[in-house]
Amino acid sequence: MHQHFIKPTIGHLRISQISSMHFEKIVSSILQKGQTKASVNKVIQHFKAVFNHAFSNDYISRNPSRNFKQLKIDVKEMDHLSQEEIDRLLSYTNQKYVGDDRWKHVLYLTLFLTGARLGEVLGLEWHRIQFATNSILIGQFWCAVSNKLVFTTKGKKDRVVPLN
Image 1 (cartoon, rainbow, N blue to C red):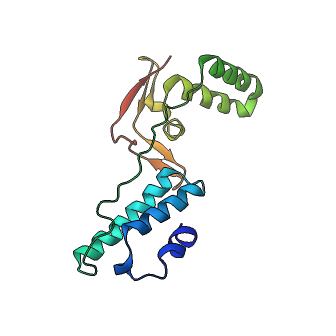
Image 2 (cartoon, rainbow, N blue to C red):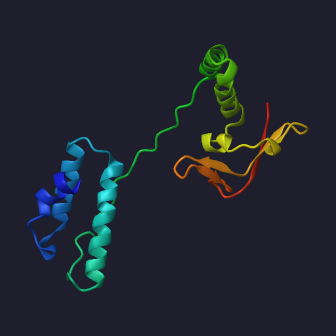
Image 3 (spheres, one colour):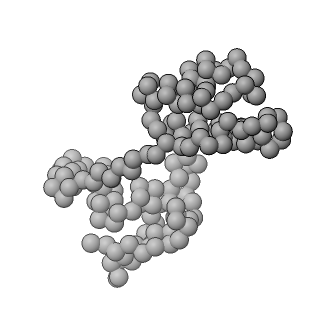
C-alpha cells in the first residue's frame, strides 16, 4: 500500500504539508485499483494514528486526519451449505474415506453435527465426549500456528454441544 499509493502521493511532502485532500486522493486511488474498503480502512487507521501522535506531540499544528472517517463496510450475510449440499458431501466422504482414512469422514460429520470450529474438533479428547448425555464439552482447541493444544476457546468459555 505504501509503495503503490501513499509514497507517490505524499512521499515528497513534509508532514505539515499533508492535508485531508491528500487522504482523499490516496483512498480514491486504492479503491480504483480494486482494493477492498477494509484495506482502505486499515490505511486510514494508520494515518489517524500517525497524525494523532504528531498533533499531540506538537509536530504539526493541525490534524488533517481529524475529520476523516472510515468507509462503511457492507456486512455480508454468511453463505451456508444447504442440507442437500451437506448430505451430498457426507455421502461422498462416507464412500471415499475407508480404512485408515475413515477419520476424514468422521471429522466432516463431527463438524456438521456440532457446529464446532475446526480447531475445536481437532482438539477433542475422548474424555470430553459424554456418550451417556449425548454431548461434547468444548473447552480447548488445536492451534495450527503453534502446533499445540490450547486450553481455552475463542470465547474463553467452555461450552456443551449436543450430539445428534
